[in-house]
Image (cartoon, rainbow, N blue to C red):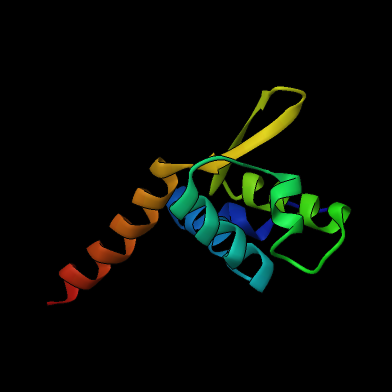
Length: 103
């Protein structure tokens, strides 16, 4: 297996690309909206909102963690998920810098 084509791109571009992948499914948008509005949630909380199985929701949460959009910590025998503010700021700053550099 050869080198990843991502190796040819700047690290920041790859990071933004991975983060944007996190927004590629309606369930992940719902997860992000609720974490932004409501602080910390566990996987079971999303079962009430999203008509998917626990395993599928967990997979979406894992993808969001891999994209660094959310973080998780173990608390009371569950993983509690919350927004990664730093990654959201990085995304916002990246796109704002593009817009401001073109003006």
